Each structure stands twice: as C-alpha cells, then as structure tokens.
Length: 202
Image (tube, rainbow, N blue to C red; front, side):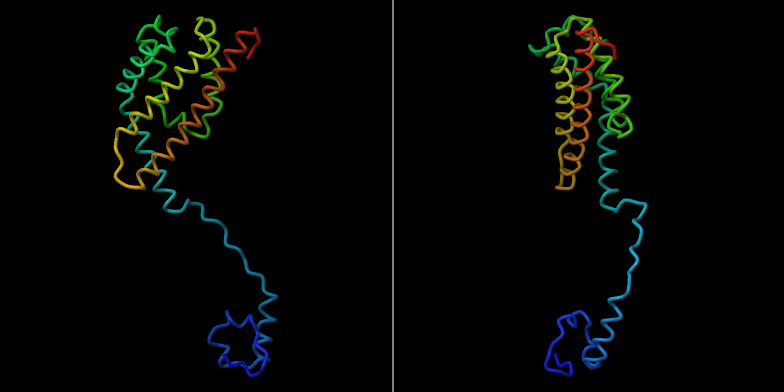
C-alpha cells in the first residue's frame, strides 16, 4: 500500500482506507494524537449474559423436579439404607425417622444449594453428627448414609434422560452444586460426631 514514502508504518494496518488518501506526515500526526487518548472502560452489565441466565433457569427446573418428587426419592432412600450392609446401624430406626431426614434434603434442595445456606448447613449437620454419636451409629455408617442420599438423588436425575448437549451441561452444573452441598454436610457431620466423641462443645 503506497504511503508517500519508501518506509512502511506497521501501525497503518489498522488505519484502513484513510491511508490511501493521507500522506505519511498526516498519518504520523494522527497516530501520535491517538496514542494520548484514554478510552473509558464501560461498567459491567448488572445482569448475567443470556447463556448464564438460561443455564440458571434450567438448573432451577431440575431442582424443582427433584423437590416435586421428594416423597418418591425418600421411599427409595429408606429402602437403600435398610438394605445396604454398610448402614446396618440404621435398621433399628423407624421408616418415618429415616424418611424425615432424607425428605429434608430432597424437598428443600434449592435452599440447600444456595450460597447463603452455609451457616444452616453447618448447624443442621453438625447437630446430626452429634446425635448419631449419641445413638451409637458408627461414623462410617453416618458418612455412608449421606453418600446414599446423594447417590439416590443423582440416580433420579440421570433417569430423566437428556436430549441435547445443553441438557447434559445443566446436569453437570447441578452435579457440581450437589457435590458441594454434600461435601459440606459430611464435613460438618463428622465434626459434630468427633466433638461428641471427645466431649468437646460446639
């Protein structure tokens, strides 16, 4: 591209068609003026981008589906705990008592998955850990019962079927939230159990 001189200016690549009508001196002056300009960065939008909003809506629908089927999930959970050889200590509890704990998770899943639920999760499962120690349930079985609660939930989600990669992504996003919740629940239940075992207050 001709610039009125033998020496090419690399910065002209982004000047565009103006380079064809301007001399080298004029272009150099224009570039020097541009270098002194400060461009204001626009503030971020208060709303998440559309793809994030769509994903949040889909996860919300999955959570609502789980909450609607809380009774069905609870019955399956009670059966699994009673039949699993690694949760023998729970067989002495009545179905209603076992069911109440599972239903508490399934029917309020949206609240448990919330970022603001940390204190509630700590209080609820720390208290559960202490209670299970007082009842004489081995710690390994307490953890296993919580894992069965999570596994039962996830078997239900997978049984719904997925029609697209987008649906699969929503499943994976929900799985991360569920895993995070149960990680916290197990941690606090173990803390409560250990504090009760060692006579520590909480």
